Amino acid sequence: MSRPNLFPALPPAPAVGGDVTLTRDDMKFIAALVYERAGIVIREHKEAMTRGRLARRVKALGMGSVAEYCAFLKTPQAAGELPELINAVTTNHTAFFRERHHFDHLRREVMPRLVQERAGRRGRIRIWSSACSSGEEAYSIAAACRDAIGPRSDLDFRILATDIDTDILARAEAGLYPAELFERLPADVKPLMRLEAAPGRGEARIAEELRRMIAFKHLNLIEKWPMKGPFDVIFCRNVFIYFDTQTKAAILDRFVTLLAPGGFLYLGHSESLPQPHPNLRLIGRTIYERTA
Ligand SMILES: C[S@@+](CC[C@H](N)C(=O)[O-])C[C@H]1O[C@@H](n2cnc3c(N)ncnc32)[C@H](O)[C@@H]1O
Image 1 (cartoon, protein in one colour):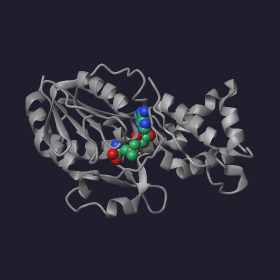
Image 2 (image 1 turned 90 degrees about the horizontal axis):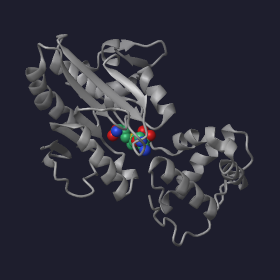
Image 3 (image 1 turned 90 degrees about the vertical axis):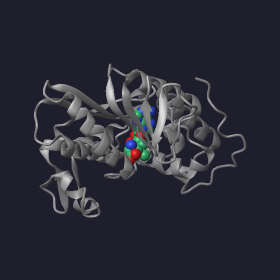
Image 4 (image 1 turned 180 degrees about the horizontal axis):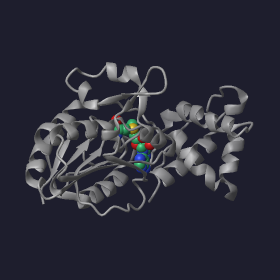
């Protein structure tokens, strides 16, 4: 994969305290490493943010400077640190029922049809949340689908939820959130979350009934995927924005291969296909259907 020239005319990085100075060479080195390992493009204007995120690793490792951290990353001993670097640079912003129209489409249009088609013979339904962050997207899918499925047990229904960030996945799997996040949910979707009391004050836990619908797994979208599919629905929201066109196009081709004909792909609000795809038809706001 050829690397884009990300820093054509970057001025010297301003220092915030002597120890977190990020030189232009170190910034280039980090950007190239993150691009190679995760496909994430760190642009010039993200330099201050990158510096702050690296500073956390510098502190965690008891190092004296970002320069020392970058030098360490160049040694063979740093292999175990690379996932931590990726965890540090990912942006995990998410929310329950974010971009509500996708969940409405799933609950009111996609699921009733799939349930009707497949119920009665333990028919298989598979949904993939492909950059699930701290789990809000996957639990919203589970809540919407549980509502459409009802109490029936004649379906083999599973959600796969994956992310590159190992720290955020552990949080997702716990299903524990500040209770105030649920208080802000619209009244019609709040009961769908089926919350349980949590041990911590001010916390709520997603009910076991929803938690067991989901398998959380580590997966890097730019590496090999172990799944064979087919998926009826793939959520790939608010992660393409971090990738360049060639990375997006390659991932998109693989999504299409894993998507069942008639299946749906949901992208994030500011995302679109890198180029028109012969097997995908736009049928709603950032909703694509696999046509063949
Ligand atoms: C902004 S969050 C989006 C969360 C959720 N999909 C949503 O829309 O609310 C982006 C997520 O993409 C993940 N990510 C970034 N690069 C990735 C990669 N190469 N493979 C898998 N996940 C990646 C990040 O760890 C982060 O959790």
